[in-house]
Image (tube, rainbow, N blue to C red; front, top):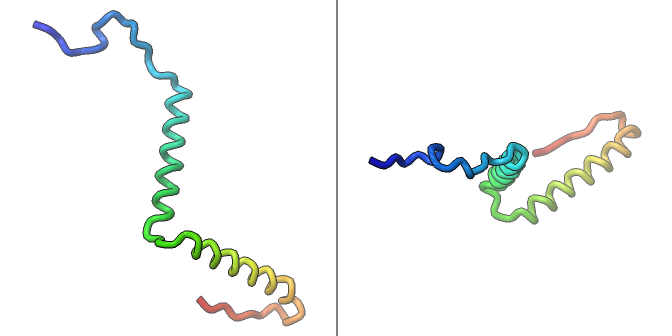
Length: 76
């Protein structure tokens, strides 16, 4: 009867390098995170433009906000 266990062979098979395995796992995790963050967004370019516009407006408000008494309206 034959056994189908690779560990009982010649022993020439090396175990995977730990650092390589960690690197591959980290890359896979980053890829999954990117994919999940983009899920449901049809047009990434428009989302980036909106984010940049919002940051620009916030920057303008923070630079000019001190003369207005520090109060501002935000509409979402």
